[in-house]
Amino acid sequence: MDDTTPSGQSSDVDISTYAWLDHDSVGFPGAHVRALELFRNSVVRTSLLAVDREIDDNAQSEDDGAVFFESDLADLHHATVQGYLLTVQAMWERGLRRLLVKREQKLCGGEGVELLHKATWSKKSGTKGLQWHFQRLLGLPMEAFDSYGDLDLLLNLGNAIRHGNGGSAERVHELAPSLWWDWFPPGETYKAGPFEVSIPADWPKHPSFDKVTLSQVVLEQLIQSVLDFWEDLENVRCNSFHRKHDSVERRLAAWPNERALRGSTRVWTPS
Image 1 (spheres, helix red, strand yellow):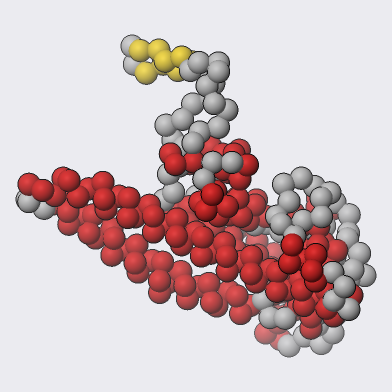
Image 2 (image 1 turned 120 degrees about the vertical axis):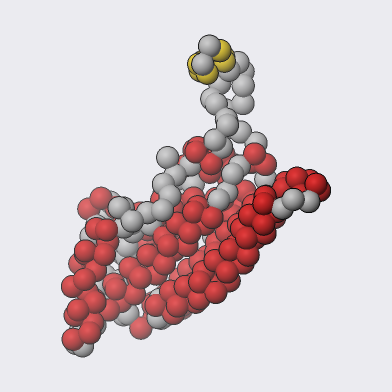
């Protein structure tokens, strides 16, 4: 298959059967897996566990002033999760851009490098954003990857954390409305015991981003989805080898089952 020609619709593309004629310019996607796993295991989980312990100790404290510390600890936990989401988003986007620039330089003589530096994550299909360049340079639509939906959420979530209310925050709400557990859409009526609550028709269509709830399970799932993306790219690279070592053959043989289990092993779903 031609390395530089976008291929069909995402529903028609099976990444497990794909191969690149020039796989050297893809680099080693597996290196991103190792770095992100180290970050998750040694930094994210360790620090959040420490904050959780402080929250538990404070809840059990007999100090009369402990109650005043509860909201500060909750804010600390939320801010830490937000900070780590920004780090994961930045790690993934930088890695993706470096990969695309390397392919551009190898396959196209570097003519489009400046365009790649300026390209943003596109919200509409057909626009020349990062997804368009990915398909142009790798021959695969990003939508064909299992983790695409979560990556879309991660990119918009990172923008919303940085900038607050706006297009990205609204996109996050469209993708994951459950992140606002106490928000209701305009014009709806709800019953709570003997009470009935009616939401005005002129109520905002999207909640304010400062009311979002970002828990550790959201962070864990988005980290796993980035790992899945790099793993899939690494497997496509391995599938491109003309001669495959036995270990590579075993890796590729296990890949379809690993992908099939991803849905059932999710720790959070943006419904």
